[in-house]
Length: 229
Image (cartoon, rainbow, N blue to C red):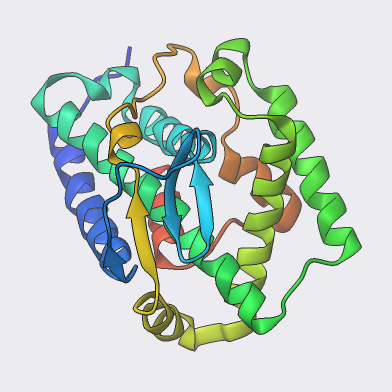
C-alpha cells in the first residue's frame, strides 16, 4: 500500500479549488431547478445537457489520476474528504466546459470530419472494452452515449485549437450569456467508485490522447495531467 503524504494532498487541494471556482464562475447565471429535468439529467447549460453517466466518466477519470498519485487510501480522513469534494466539483467543471464548447462549435459551424469520427469510435471501443465489470456498472453509460462523448470531446478540442490564444477570453465572454441549471437532487447522489483495482485500467483522457495526440482543452486539463504525473 502506498504511503500518503499529507503535504502532497494539501498541495493539490488549492490547485483544484482555484480551477473549479474559475470554471464555474464563468457559466452565466446559476439557476437551481428541482423540477423539469429528464431522467439522469445532471445539468443544463444553454440548450445542451449533461447526463449523470457522462459526468461519471469525468469523475472516474480524475479518481484514477489521484489514486495513481497517492494510492487508493487517499480518500481516508478529513483531508481525503476534502479532496473527494474537490474532484467532484472538478469533474462538474470539466463536463460543463465541454458542453459550453459544443455550443461554441455550433456557433462557429465547426464539425468533425469522417476520419475524426472514426478515431473517436475506435477510442470509445478501446476504452469501453478496457473497463472492468465494476467500472461499467459504476458508470452506467450506454456505448452510444459514450461514443458521442468521445466525439464531443474531439469537437471541443477542435474548437479550442481553432480560436488559439484568445480562447479563454472568448470562452469567458460566451459563458456570461448562458444559463446554468443544476439538478441538485441528482447532484447529492454523486459518489466516487469503490473499486480497489481502479488504476489497472486506463482513464478516459489516456485513451483519448492515444488517438488524438493529447486531451488538452485549456488550462484545467493541463493541471489534470500534472496532478496525474
